[in-house]
Length: 370
Image 1 (spheres, rainbow, N blue to C red):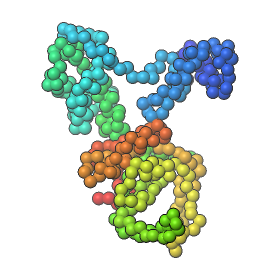
Image 2 (cartoon, helix red, strand yellow):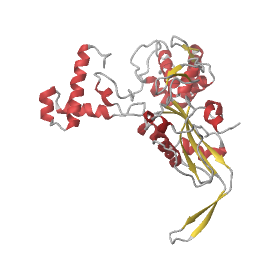
Image 3 (tube, rainbow, N blue to C red):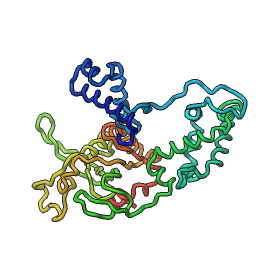
Image 4 (cartoon, rainbow, N blue to C red):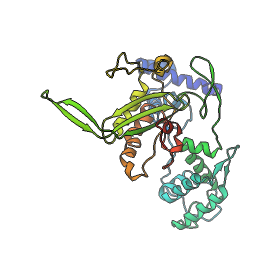
């Protein structure tokens, strides 16, 4: 709010006051008389506040900023054919073109993955000229004529292509970092007690967390009771251990044990829930001589300020290219899982490239995978 000019800041404060009064239970007439905002305008403001932001959360008070766009522009009418060197009148045409021909979007993603396109220190795109040439060739291959977009534009859609490339790079946190030339560093951060420490690869705790499941190929026999109170034995041939690990501190935030041959999306969500809830040490164990390490403890118990703390980014295993890992991929990348991460937790998910376990080195090392 401090970044707004004085006139816009005053208007914003009136809108914020109106919304707060509405949430407090004031009548529409009282709100209109006090703030000067009509009820229809107030309803529009509430709809803007409740709209979903691309970061997975609602806009909230961000939706009250005057002239702030809360919805991406979608073009429905095709660009009118015309002579080459035409300029203007093509807002949203690049997005429309990419949606119409998926091979064009795939070309952009491929060039980014191969590092043929990258960002310079000044946020300019390196390799844009060659990408633009290949992009126009692909447009011709899919049937775009010389009188259609982008050929009928002055720069043949080069500037819009640059925006599309930056948008594609920003989808994945790691892709954007690699494109900008980011490297593992050892910055200085302050822990929750105010002490300085060094953490490799990240800036602060709870910034990036990694999730994965580790299977234990062991045979167990569990004794259960049926509804009639009679005991029966269930033999298990595999147990899964699901873990969420904080990258900065290497602290295990939560885990979940699955007594099944495969885990599903509900087990993944249960692991996230266990990672957010405060944890305390057990008073006693059922296994004799089993105890905690003398200096061991849970983060939420040793540092109460970390209770219910949520990470900003979560790295997941993108196993969809492995035939034997289809069930695992369905659990990690299921719609319910992604929705829980983005809508409920408000964090970003990064599935990363397939067959690249080094993209999640800390959780892989934790499980001792080779």
